[in-house]
Image 1 (cartoon, rainbow, N blue to C red):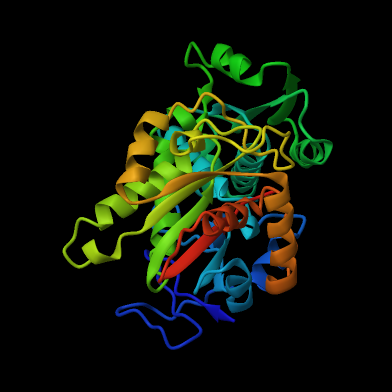
Image 2 (cartoon, rainbow, N blue to C red):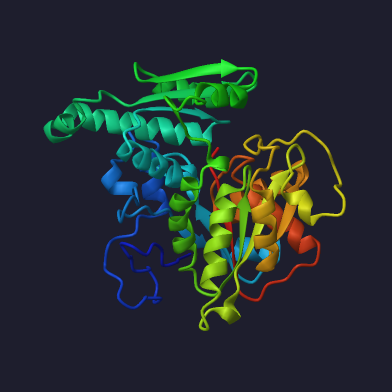
Length: 366
């Protein structure tokens, strides 16, 4: 099993012979080490995992030859964002947003989320408040403002296991509330500016944190395509913008990186921009794809097309097949949401798509 080179601001050296010029010898944690750390009762400290303003944030990206052969591509990497200590790739962006707004004097936040973004926000806010209470220096800096407040607004149909994760983090500063229309409630709560919304689909700050994901993916040798499970399209837009800009250089023009967005039969306003018809309208077993407004569609779709990518709608059969193949050939279990990237790749291969360089599927959170 090969582990690629990852990260850029801090730099790491791969465990094989691929060494990038100028990189330092900072240790890259294995998938097993990060999994053990992220399963601990307390999240890793910010200094260990956050690439905020020059601090590293690293998740493993490993190649699986047997899985590649089973799917039908020559080289396949899995980017393990499910091992992020803040629960998913949302942990790259939400903390950056909060940090920026804290510097503007904001102390009260609200978020409407199906689970992953809310989890990242809760873990980060809880950690900041713990640092505030434990550090004299931090206490002096924050004493005029008090603790950071976070209101998490969830829908009435949120899966109970996701709700439990959030409720376990609730305290005097973090509240979890159910609403029939959580997004509408968020808009109302944040209308006067006294509470800061953390809605990613309408905030350009959200794109900044995902640049670290793009930079890490770009370290994969001969990268040609990225399969990204997508709800609002924020992460996919950040990746697409990064690789469009990167492709402008003379050195990179021949190495265009495609971004492929993967959605579900239950929610696919972005993916349908690339499809003539849908084979199924079944209720998807992958429940993290929920944004039907697709506010980023007019920006994202042209970007994806420009770099040769596409959109895919994964069926439940394809998702289950992806789960089985990952378990069998990569040796670990993923949720239906985590399997979406591989499910999209399977559909793309069956449609006749081919690549002669590396493909990466992003494994998202639960």
